[in-house]
Image 1 (tube, rainbow, N blue to C red):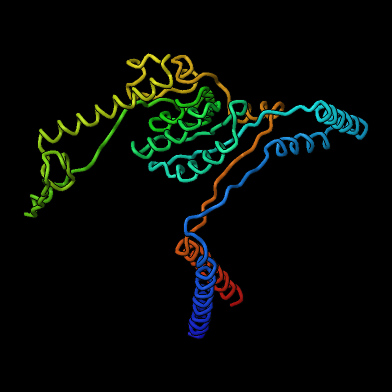
Image 2: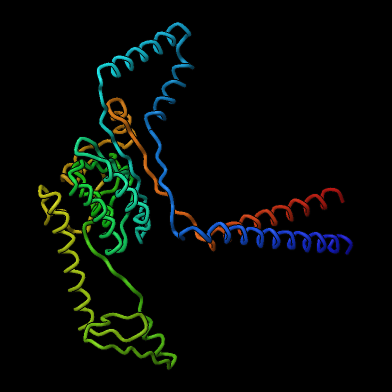
Length: 341
């Protein structure tokens, strides 16, 4: 009983402390956000050449002896001096990332990154998109694709690198690139449209539960989860899918006219090697290989737009961290009690 009483007192003090911290954090966040626009963020820019240079120099430092290392540094300095004297200007490569979920949520930062790139990119530069997505909602990936189309329309070369998967809406985005590079075992394709939903009408009917669906317009609701679906509704729903599929094929064909559309627009997917044979991609190569090669002849800049979290999100994160610490402290104290007893 003494242990439980002591534990209850410890828990009460801890909870009180956590609540006080959360109140203070909420007040600070509210004050800081008073003069800031909710949802604003900032653009992080990192020069990838420095990253590749650091990797090489670390390896050279470990492998080469002092004499060869000194010679290598001296040769690099001379080369840099000659380039500067000759007035050489390297082309620029802007690297973007898109990790797509079913709602293409990454579009929220992609749109700002594209806007930033187009504010200074020229046709002599290049945009490289590292794309990973298995697809999702049609309208969401339609908007994401439109952001990439802005790059094409501006005359800036666009290269899309797929290391793992670009299927369905992911391939809708990938096809906009003038070049599509894919890893040998990446998943490519799925030019098709799918929709599925459960229907529990018979279960409700079995338990004498009525569900009314009221609409204004014959096809306002074709298929439902709770109501009774009709053959006419199914037919209309299928027609809508077919229409979307035609638009999807037309979109892909606009950017990759070399494709045998009837052969590849079946909803199937192919690994990188097979996708190359069907001309869904242009080259088998990983993004690491391509960017490392480009870093030798161009300046690479990685862009990532970071959105500022709302007050609710910041408080929620703080509460989650505090709860984790509370549970960890409780678990540690409990095990100490067991050990010393």
